[in-house]
Image (cartoon, rainbow over all chains, first blue to last red):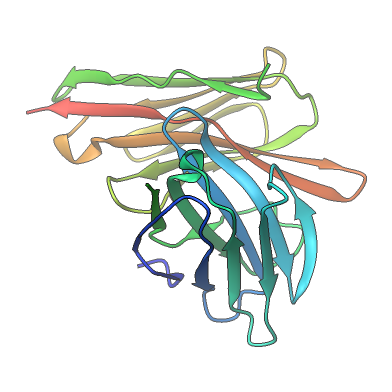
Length: 114
Length: 113
């Protein structure tokens, strides 16, 4: 158990809808990362937050947004969903901002868009 | 061209075989190199971490980095069915204070009993 909690584990929704994925980092970790994993693209970095502030942005679509709250949990919002958004979404956490070490991953949220 | 290239496999080997998993990269700014293991329906977990060129050994696992060739490898000796998983290489670059953590697409390994 990595100590990172993600909810929901599975989500099925329709095109055009909006969903929110939630992540609670390991106790004491201030950095949260969001990744999207699909079969053909692998693990793609979306965005990183550190202590409530956005730190780095990857290949995150404009339809997607995220935030980190004062209690350090984070939410990833996906809107105007398309079939191609179906993927596993992982949250990871680390203690530091400029992380050169291990990322601790949750078990992921599997999103299916029909 | 992707910054990190990894053969997706799948790779099937008999129990006891030596397994070699590889990644190539194009960005010379990558300084830290890792291998993560991901079991089905689970998140990735760190397996090996290296900084410099050369070999690092941990039990049955050896990580090798060749910065001059931009090539990293993971060797698994005496492979076991419990090693069946997807192995992802990961690299970190530091440019102007921004740290970028990039993963390969992963290689699926199946060790047959």
